[in-house]
Length: 266
Image 1 (cartoon, rainbow, N blue to C red):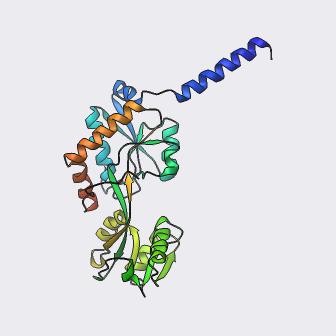
Image 2: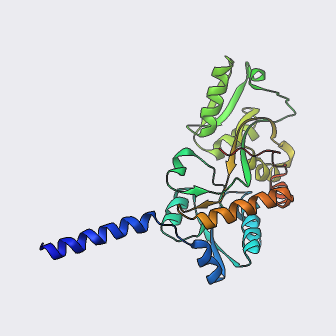
């Protein structure tokens, strides 16, 4: 390669690095386009789902609608799954993600988050009217949980921390764990509270009722890094719509529970 080509290559490399670190203007692009492309997981009831009329519904769907309305643009829903939420953001297939997207330190290395607009709570739940107030009440009981899940780790750590002698019964997936509890094999279930809504609607004669919260995960709008204008707009929008009760109303409609008075940042 001659000196001229080396110089051009070096300048190109510098330009690419500078572009990667520069602020983008997705907010301006959205307004100019007149539409926002939002990634939503429609397989995660009650956050996102398709009802019997093939209508997209759920708390994240309604949140995205309200977000688009706040921007004064059309909403385009792009279906995402947990594994492709970040790739879809990074490749520009979506402008933002509103898909039960919890804030974690690992994810913050790749993407940015708005202020949290909702929560996902891991609870200890029971059937048959069994009342529990904390981990100590699990002594001598069998506790159903999905193997190798976050819920598994949380209950294992909680029992160990309080030196509680309980038996953890692990199943290979959520469906198997739910069926075990509904069939009476165990009457204690460690589960995301959001999952109880569709489970109880489908099984009204054997409701699984939350007893106490193990962990609260904040959920936020995901966006690409280096988007200061969009992040500022989202943060203001979340703050205003938590204060006026709109986001709580959406959450309560689909989750049958109120948002905490204070939503943790992480």
